Image (cartoon, rainbow over all chains, first blue to last red; front, side, top):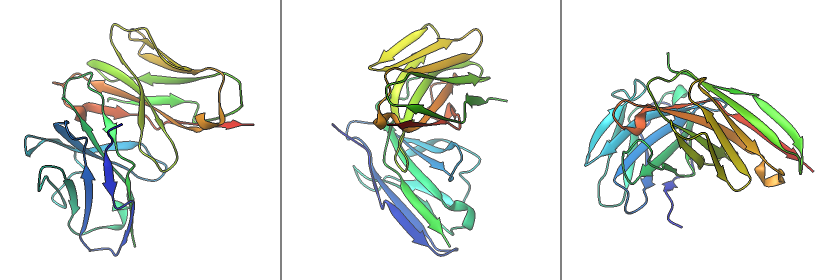
Length: 115
Length: 115
């Protein structure tokens, strides 16, 4: 069964360092998303991406964050200068369409720990 | 303010027993309601998606109900198994044009099934 894959599964970094989280969405999906979940809290939307550009972003997704689809398969989230409060599980998701009833498939997540 | 509230926060049941999880929401306008299962440290996995016109939807031992008038939903698990131990997240999509960024997540109910 096709799945969304994410790497790394866990990354530890020092405050102020840059981090890149990688995702390979399901191959025939056109819409890509990043969500994050701080430990013990609810999942929060960060950004959606379609046709090589950001289609929507939340207040959390400030200038510190960027997304890119560098080739035909990868979808990356870059955090430029990490802060302690960026420690969270980051989930990539993809969907075939942006229709309101579209199925959203999540990856296993990348746990980011900022020291 | 668009919110999704779930109860109980946590629940312990014995294997083989049934249970019902509740979700109340204030998201408006409403597009659809989703239930996800999230194993510890893993990504959410979709169980059901229900639109305004659907009252009940089943997926194996999982049955979701939706009352769009009272803005309530429930997830009923029949004959629980140890593998049902997970967080169950209620997610409501607002109808703002079809973007998946309108998903409002609840905090989840943590279910523990004991032998």
